[in-house]
Image (cartoon, rainbow, N blue to C red; front, side):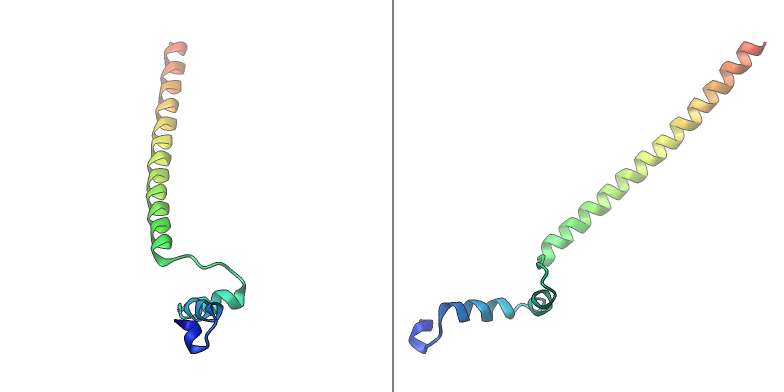
Length: 80
């Protein structure tokens, strides 16, 4: 159909590509474009991993305090 109207397929493809609102900025900056849904998925994954990291950090602190308490207790038993 495009050829009937004197439009080359490459021109049509380029127009479709540039019709994306972020395409002009990405093309000018020579960077790739990430679809919004992919970006949202990555952001959700980052939030999940941050939560896991916070949980593990808290567990680490609790274990450190427990180890210090055990060491104190062992020193107290040895000195009696």
